[in-house]
Amino acid sequence: MSSTPNELSPDKSRKEVAPTPEGVERMETRAVYTPRVDIHENDQAITLIADLPGVDRSDVDIMLEKNTLTLRAKAVAKAPEGYSLAHGEYETGDFERSFTVSEDVDPDAIAAEVRDGVLTVTLPKRAPRTRRINIGG
Amino acid sequence: MYGNLNWMRQDLPWMGPLLPEMARLRDQMDRVFRRRTASAEHPPVNVWTNADGALVTAELPGIPADKLDISVSGSTLTLRGECPAPAEALGAAHRRERARGRFGRTLDFPFQIDSAKVEARCERGIVTIRLPRADSDKPRKITVSGA
Image (cartoon, rainbow over all chains, first blue to last red):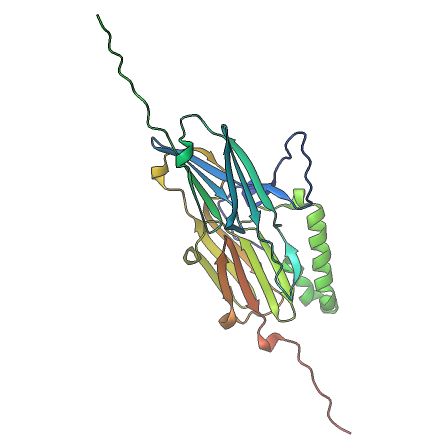
């Protein structure tokens, strides 16, 4: 199979298998992958963008517990009917990854959307609380 | 798909019928040695086949259908496109793991593709392309007439 040159680095085209947390064993034999993410930050919010190919909006689970944001997603694996696999470069599995979130994020205002297999999570920052302290005297 | 095995078709015509088997063996070996042979090719594709043609699926999260350029010529499929960069308004990047920039991929098939009947769709970041084999390329059954 030949290919035209492309600008992506070698490690970008393969999925990385997610590490199993210490002391936990997986019950399913299905592969679990670490989704590739971009994280951006500006004055108003932190934005997390994750590649979740094959994942439907209803199959994404986002949890915030204390300061840990966990993404879990189930990909739809459907072998085309009447065909047999002749060449395989990727496998379909689930996605899992956790992030530590700083305290200045407003947990009630977190929003997420899925489009074309990409999840975007917006974590708005809490408005800075300023208090003026008057000095009496 | 049989890519660099195609020279055998010309130089060693009697090898013809063995090509699919050899390609399958090579693919299995590639899988065993994936660490060594893993290529930088983006997007990763799976190729499915049957007697009527092939079905290609590619993982292209974040690429809407209108940003993907699919072309077919003879027995070759070419996929081209560009991963959209995140909006600058999102601010400074702390992590950049997702694919970016332009990509291009060419796949060769051991049959002529009926380009008029090629269908493609994008769903959940997976592109599926159906490549029917041209009728003129399909094996023909010849009936023997006579007493």
